[in-house]
Length: 394
Image (cartoon, rainbow, N blue to C red; front, side, top):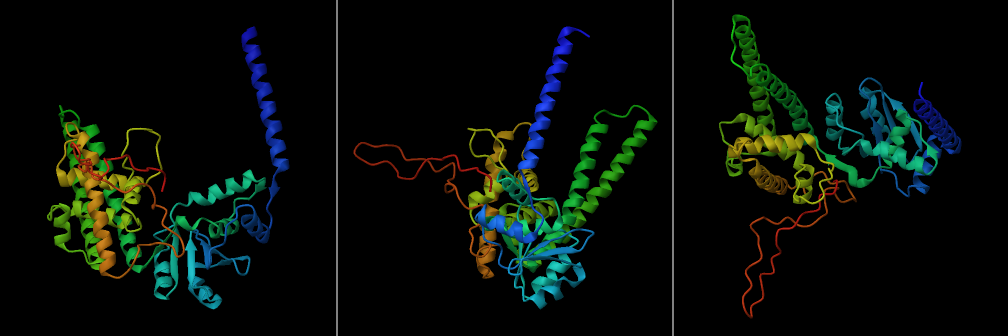
């Protein structure tokens, strides 16, 4: 081995030893949490947060639920089928869950039917962030369901959203629609990749025919799922064909209607227009290309809807897509406000005592809103020019 190789190996060995020593020292300095009451005290004193007024539930697909009630400072493992009875015995009126799961929708509908408010954590990653935040205070929180239930109760109220039975019913069908749409999109992309050239022999012709038949079947399944989804949303939120026409959605395009309903459900919990824009991942400024957190599925739905409504060509009209998506988001968000006002629901999904996370930033200005021309002796138009909006994570 050359001297250069030996020197590099020695340097790597020293760096590994330093990293090991640093890691060992850090682990020794950390205080490991072993009790629920101890973790509650750390969350109150070190993080300065108040617990959720109700029950925090950590759901698991295959295991019983872990319920943390701050007033009792204890975590209880309860089977899912006995969840409602347990909460009613404890007199719980509000629950907070870590994430929506289609397997748990029936029990959540039971809770809503029993008059219990259901709140959902918008971004489950907040629990892991709290664990890291406590680690910065030299507190090590082991990864377990009972400790996750405690951390869930101390998440920021700005990360909660209140859901009702209407939203849960539509959300459950929306998941099925998304699965069907994703299968079709995947097969469509595969078809374009495998059949970029014309078949030259019988084997290639048979393979192409197979892809065409499969694509046609998935397209039919996608349209059927879209039809069911649209009907459920129309029934629960009283959307009419006239509403689709005002949005520019072609009435005979059931897939476009499904994309519209999907965007509508996603922006229901956005209290401001800028919140909906940020959630859709639409960047309004070319300055600072750093990526910001947004909803990838909502961004996909808005993009596909813009292509269908405005018949845009990605090869020649790519520059118009952002403006068209902004127009659609604005129209659909206004429709969501009208629906909630007509049904007397107030603010959509806003957690009690806390403002929605999407709120904030500058007000939305249409690109056509320009300042008027300056004239001699006359003040210019006070309407501000188009500005880059606040695109911080919601």
